[in-house]
Length: 267
Image (cartoon, rainbow, N blue to C red; front, top):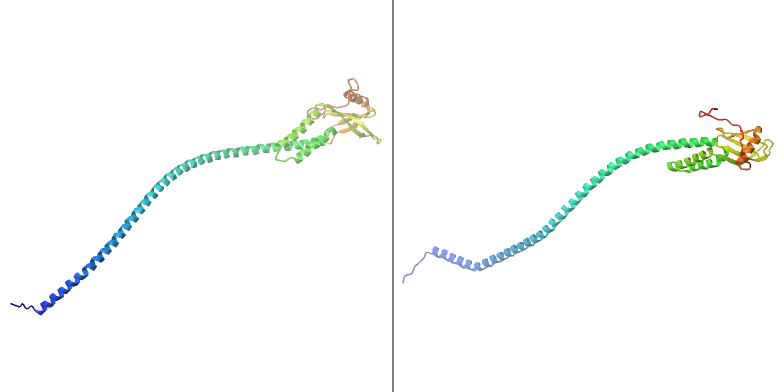
């Protein structure tokens, strides 16, 4: 039997290789186990990510539907707002036109108001001038009218106009009729008697005491009616008073007086 003798160096290398193989064989199960665990962990993370992705995708789809519906709603609201805005613009334009017309009308009204205020002021001044020379029979009525004008609102043109119209209507009624009045009168001797005064409108007046002892002619002037004693017309004045009072039959009587023309002079 032959014995094969190998070099020591060769044996040493083979021994180390064998030891390495045996060592790798011993580590292999551990390496496989670690790879499996890493694979399992990676797979779990992948599944978790897929689940999260699916959840997010589903949530996004739900949100997408809600957002789509919201967009449609907002679009409808936008269309409604646009229509409403257009209507408001049309209404604003119409109101602007109306406002311009109202301002123009207001300007016309202000002009008309100024005109009527001037007319009312003119009539008021005319009433005051007439009151200064008005017969005693109208004094109280015209004083009441003036008091009403004083307390009336200056802006109430209609109210002021009605007061003035009523006053001048009363003056016109007095001027168109014959009116009798009874007033106390102090004579030159100091005696006071009640006399009858017959107004011939605003042209003349005639007064006489009941006994027919003294008579007057009442002549209008700017400062009031002047009483002019007329002893030469006592009986005639007494007769026209009695005729007016229907205590004697009608008759023709001559009384003093003057007829004035339109210019205010004697005609």
